[in-house]
Image 1 (cartoon, rainbow, N blue to C red):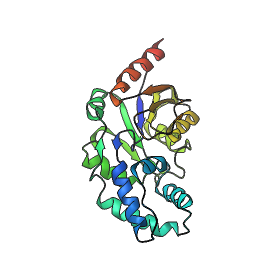
Image 2 (image 1 turned 30 degrees about the horizontal axis):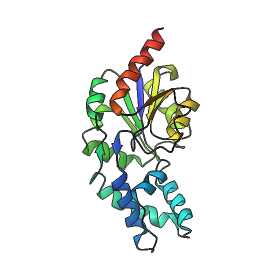
Image 3 (image 1 turned 90 degrees about the horizontal axis):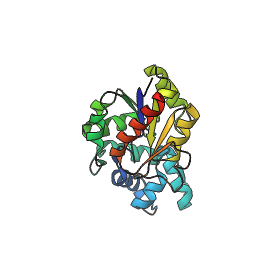
Length: 220
């Protein structure tokens, strides 16, 4: 028995999408006179999906607007500019290729349609059998529901699965689903998010070593 399935977060784990998300947010709020967000603020706001991002931003700016209006503008802009400045992190393509024998899925808290666009345009979609977004299942990370549904779909057991992510939402979802967790320290995660992770990587290519260690533990 060994590793069968690797589940990945998208933003901050596979790709650096901060700039494109920032531009979409600023487009959405521009006509309402709300102070634009910076790249640093964008990193602090992402992780729970577009709706929660806007909720947190409006609370921070003390603005009172209908979320739906901002979400529509955000999504329409982002759908047209999904990878203007978004790039895979160093080593992503090579590492995914090196791990070709393992089945792979993506669980993102952004909408599935945009997640698919990002992966397809960056030539990464070929590595994943399934891509789930915030609108795929009844709940989203940090709920374990998306992870459990993917395990069921792939016929994989928790002890045969890893989840790789850059936020506490990924680690919490993985732990609640009973799978091993890998904290991607190079992403957007807040300080301390990795405390409960089983493994830690500071660059994507280190995932190969994690997989080897995981398998060695299972054999032992």
